[in-house]
Image (cartoon, rainbow, N blue to C red; front, side):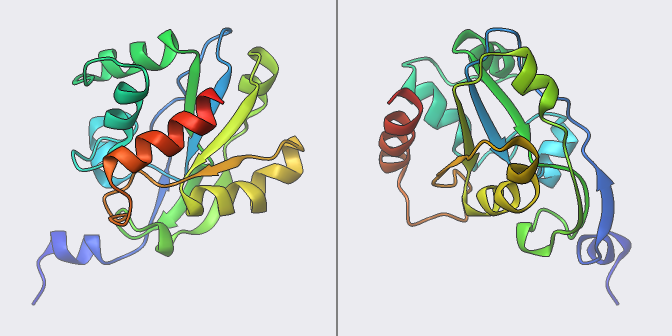
Length: 172
């Protein structure tokens, strides 16, 4: 008989996004994920799973040390004029599985897009890109560039290859 934790991991839960966006009036780049993983929700900040390469990629692009804490991560983003959030405000999801996402309600990006000189919108991975195109593009009228996912599930992409692809897109 599965224990309560196992049943919970295998059952869809409706979850409201627990992390506010990171941005300020100097943000020029908006990077969107799909929805925070279980680890990110526990940490209460983006890309909290230790195997996700998001922070390694950004640290490498900007030649900075790996940001360990939430405060260091926020500071890295803001120092480089990057806004970060997710496409989804709430959904039904099983654990961290993007493929299980249902009943999507989207985040309102207008405060960021109207409050900062965002020159580019980027989606971290195909799922974030698909969700953005389906739910958010009709509201913003601004397309997003889909970047290769930093998720550990994207094993076909080495860290070096991710850094190069992200650098080319983010920095032009």
